[in-house]
Image (cartoon, rainbow, N blue to C red; front, side, top):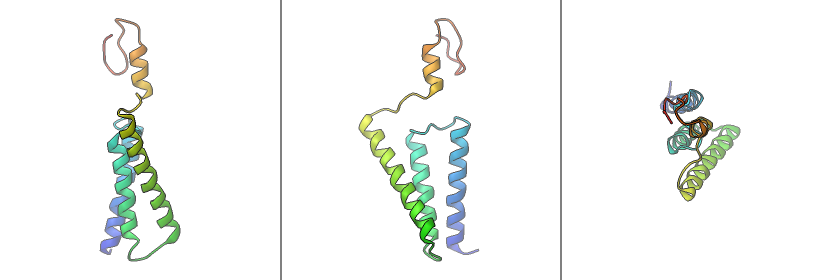
Amino acid sequence: MSVSDVIGVIGVLLYLVTYLLLQIERLRFDDYSYLTLNALAAILIIVSLIEEFNLPAFLIEVAWVSISLMGIVRRRQNGTSRPCEEQKRAQAAPAGSKSRLGNTH
């Protein structure tokens, strides 16, 4: 396995771990960490394409980096991210009830 293959595999693993963390609600789609990890994964895959260029793979990764950077810029402009559905539900819970997040209101 070449160095560029290893870099590409790390990029793929980073994508998968990031997506897993999103699905198990350890990350939110508008968190800096989620956006940054996606951009980094795409950059690693782009770097891996230096040895054996593949235009379709390159184009999708450039799009992925661009969209992730757009999300980061948008997040910075807004100042804060929107609360996820769990947080909205927790905030809307009646006084004295316990939400799924474990907060008592």
